[in-house]
Length: 414
Ligand SMILES: [Zn+2]
Image (cartoon, rainbow, N blue to C red):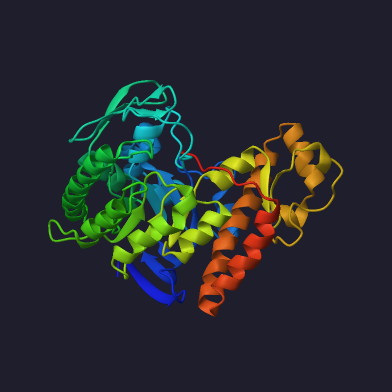
């Protein structure tokens, strides 16, 4: 079968579960963390290293690949997986998040108390939205050269089919927690209509490109922090059919009030078909991953582990710390003594401290390998704990130690 999802075990009393996604490029045991390779590369590391840390798939961005090198080139190359020499499954997001957020100070997770912005045209304080959204699609400026472009649901599908990832996302409108309730309602309806158009175009392209490996399409659920809107989005897209097809899975998207992240995921999970996979978009901090897994998200992606690594912030069971701080200059212990990654097996905090201070390229590479290993394995351990029936104990043990010293930060867009 070209694409399927098999349920394994659930967390008693919760929507969370373990399972297995099958794609033309192999399987993904879930829950799983999917590293982000924005421009068909996980920044600073070889695909072999990404595989060595246990990653089962990577997620690239349709917006970035559309601008550079362009979808036709990826199609000519035989698709994303072949082009980047990654023989496991791949995802692409729809480009919607990037076209509507890049360069305008948008944050994926917004502090509800960060001030009162009353205009729907504002995304962050004093920053105006540069993308123009209408019922047909979005007109936006390239962050590379300022040139004007347009994405519609149809164009997003065409771009993602040419990129050729195993799992694609429907084109949706991004809102923020600052948008008014009325705007959220209008936007949700727009996203619903766009989802229908995505299914139609996806069916047309799947037939037209029947010789290519099957690409699965996930519908994206919006609704911000409103329970009725989140449940409606999940019901609508969960039951949606057009051109004789339905979504293969679902992306849980949009602005998320982090203080109730698990609750928002639960609202959607309770309404969605149980036998289809769910991806929580742009979430990757340990406490958020536990909340997402517990409440029914199967896969996750986030730039945080790799982006933070490049600024010398590394994860440990006692929280995240900055290895370039002076206190680690003569610390010859590994980043995490219990970690089996290449970095911790072979190098000291003192060496990483030196590399970052000397601005050597190897610093980001070694820190990225460690952070990816840490987060990928954290979610893998959640999967094993679900199968062993001790998820709650694992969650309590891990977070008890991690949060004692850690300061949580926001995830931000690519
Ligand atoms: Zn390590």
